[in-house]
Image 1: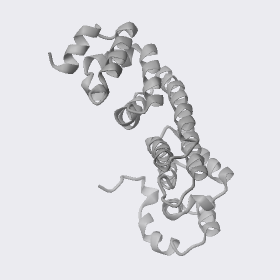
Image 2: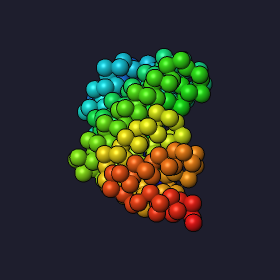
Image 3: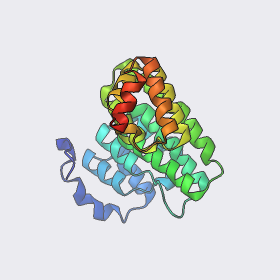
Image 4: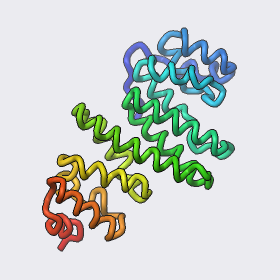
Length: 228
C-alpha cells in the first residue's frame, strides 16, 4: 500500500532514477536546499554511510516528519558487508532519532541494528543490548508521563512483541511493569499477547510483578495464560 503523504511531496518518485546517478554530496545538497518532493527522493536513495554524522543529526532535528521517516528507513541496518563498528554507529543514530522524533521507523531500525550485531557475533553486542534495555525503561517512563499513547503502543508492537526473549529487554520490561500500573493491568488481563513464547519462569516473574504493580492477581492471570 502506498504511503499517504502531504501534497507537497506529490510526484517524488519521478526523481528517483535520476537521483540514483547523483553523488552523495549532490544528494546532500538536495536534502539541504531542494523542494520537498526532491528532498524526499534524495533521502530514498542516499547512502548514509557517506554522510557526516553531524549532518544526519541535524536532519533528525529539522526535517519534517515525512522526510525524517524516510531518513530512518535509509539507516543501513543488517548490511552483510558492514562491520561491528558500523552496526554500533547505526544503533546510536536510530536511538538519537527516536529520542528526537518518536517515529516508530527509528525504533525498528534501532533493533534491526542490534540484531545485526548479534548475528555478526560482535563483542560489543551484549553491552549494546543492555544499554538499550536501560534506555528503553527510561524512555517508556517518559512516554507514559507525557501520555503519548501512540508511542507506547509502538513500543509494545515493535519491541515487546518481538524482543522479550533477549534478557536485557526482558529485564527492562519487568522494570517497566513494576512502575506502570497501566501496563501491569494490560499484561495481566491478556498475558498471552506478550508472554506466550517465554519460559514458565519468565512468565511467572512478569505476572508476579504485574500483581505487585496493581494488575490482576497472579493466579487469575496465570490461569488465563495457560487456559485453565
